[in-house]
Length: 457
Image 1 (spheres, rainbow, N blue to C red):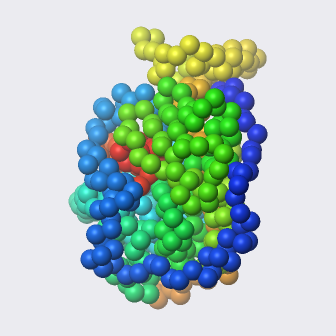
Image 2: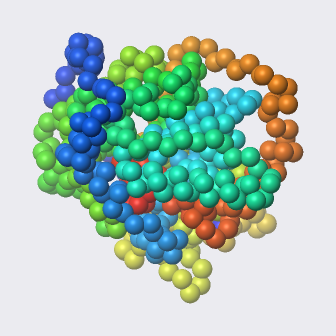
């Protein structure tokens, strides 16, 4: 299948700034005066996980069953989930390049879910991974996947697995510094996929989540994530006749369309095949201002379409699109149908396919193109990706022994080939790579948008 995508012919609504929001600088000043609300885990704070919306989120993901590869393939949003997961792969791969260390990076997977990104960390040749999530069952499944991966690599003898530790905690309530096995733990990268917005239920929770993401980053370290685009949410809401907008695969319902508080701006999000879970909108200028407290500078804020266009030309990335089935083949193979049966859901693809078939160079002319149905694209285009960088100069860790230097190119190639074998195999490891919405694209707190179970979104 050609990796060429037929751009969805859906007009993008103009970006609007939410109304009735106070000045960001004033909010930041108010935040500075607030008492320190985050604290080490206690019986009281752990009990809070079982009440309120955070308890609802934890229970939702703890109760989710592990879906099979067959179940995922039957999903109406199968390609959307895979596309979102490919986007996440690009974000993670590019971030690891930005913080590259000879001996491997140390990574915090905040809201890790069931471990849908484990193969991505393997491909990134990291040194250590810390996985944290509010849903204890998800953390247990994540740890099992890791242990299975360690055992496979031990038997093969061809690949060394990164070290890992696992933490079950409400990351918007508990300071993770109290949970790390190494009290002076520092990270090169923190990744929080499809989950960070859940913390904006309240100011204190948002600040604690941000503190956990940024406080232990080394100078030059990155904090990356994916969240719903607040501007896009408000724009689509204002264009709707009522308080609900969406299509056959997703639906968003707000409580009103006049005011949008900085914290606690709740809306209900429903994705096809996924149990509803309340979410909270992020006004990004506020997050950018909050991040300054932790010496974080904004590197980028991008729509998924921008990330696709920046990365789709690479031969390797095109191969990954095909392997992950991140785009639907159009026209479909004989005897098969399209994922959507909705009229005109592929009109954009028909137009593009006609253009491609009219190309003069017969040798390079593809017989089909890759695309998403309009309905899936509308849902996927609700999201955006961000990256913050810790102020200061990057410093390479001192090498204690020469032998511990980075592997030679041939060794890296062997490791990558081994990883690809796993990804192509039949098992949960391969499933994890494609289950996001994005493999587990969303963490326990954000899975509903990726896969409905792990990576939703």
